[in-house]
Image 1 (tube, rainbow, N blue to C red):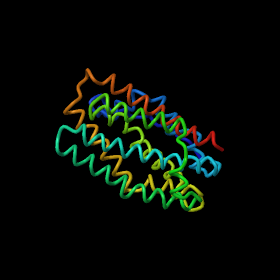
Image 2 (image 1 turned 60 degrees about the horizontal axis):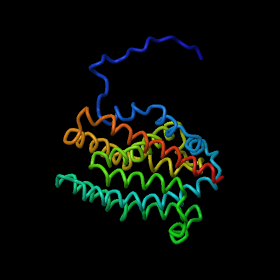
Image 3 (image 1 turned 45 degrees about the vertical axis):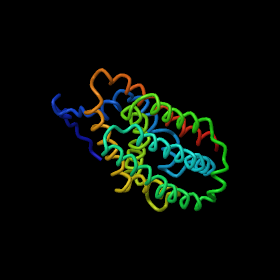
Length: 236
């Protein structure tokens, strides 16, 4: 195929994305790349990930979701406005009443029952990540908590969409159903809602003086996501 050279037009400075979420992600570009393009992720995309690695990840993700639900319970308490309380309560309900059930059904297809997963010991990567999120929320305010939550919520949407665009969600990939779930419209909307929450909280509670601290939280959570992928890979 003949290649042509085309000059890339860069947007003027005023057109650059200056949203708080984009700035946080850009502040940890190296870590974000390590997270969204991890070997575990690439293995999901081409189907080469060893099944024991995926099963271990699924079991730990069940335990992760329990702690994630607690984080949204904390978000209800930390909310200073009624709309933030309602949003956090809706997310808590979605995890406990919908996502957990869907996760259990999905895991059953991989030979993992809910009693088995509930009895699993937490891997150190699971404990480190979930307790970091909770401790950040306890020590800080709602914006701090969402800076710790956002890498997981939005990162999975980015991973799912990227892998689906490369054909990873096709039925001939044993991990295609997982990819399709995170690439789907429902989860993509969850991620968009999280970005909107970050922006709203940034307007209410942010300011330039807080950015570096928020970026440190976001970066730490992103690194813990890398460790969570690696935990699964190491179990193979």
